[in-house]
Amino acid sequence: MKVILERKRSGVYAIGEFDPVSKTMVVKQGATVSSDIHYTEKFRGARTIEEFRNKYVVDGKTVMDVSFRSASTAANFVTGGSTNGLVAWKTEDGKPIREILGK
Image (cartoon, rainbow, N blue to C red; front, side):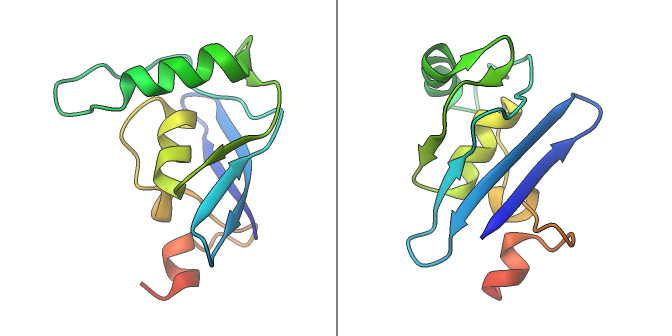
């Protein structure tokens, strides 16, 4: 299913493809990711985000589709910080993935 993650303040805008069966997510080419990565003691994913961005992001945009094992990992990649992907990713009519999955 097509989903969108948008944060106007930070200029983040990404289109994703979520598979409700496997719970995997693909962030589509051309996504605009945040310019920052939140390096905090509680957020342990910062280094992984940095590695993925070095590989898949040029000038703040993804240069190819990027696959993730979960909606939250994909959201972390896009926002640069700890993000609940089941809430952040929404369908075109504004429903979060969590609502679609009935959680």
